[in-house]
Length: 125
View 1 (cartoon, rainbow, N blue to C red):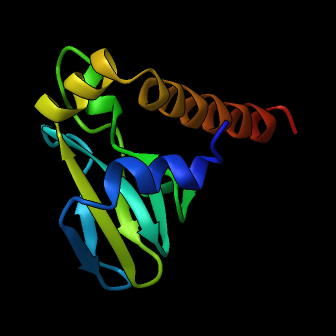
View 2 (cartoon, rainbow, N blue to C red):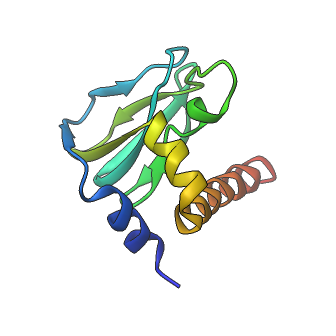
């Protein structure tokens, strides 16, 4: 089985990559979301109501929640902590990959599961 970083590279390396500088906002809480992202390099902070919820690290995906929730709203604000290289995947391609590529679906579930575990551990401390 491929490592998570290899899966991200496999599905996102061919997409255009945008560069964000430290402090730059990638998306804002409450905005409509029509794409998800893969963090190719750097670190991103996710904030809800100006409180840090989690930090996203290289080779992880984020923003997929807006693609699967009925209202398609972003529930956090994503801010670059360092210089970041980010690949973007639109909703149509996301849905295609979920349907046609089990490995992609597994990577999304793995990412969500890992991040949910971290949040639970924070809450239980």
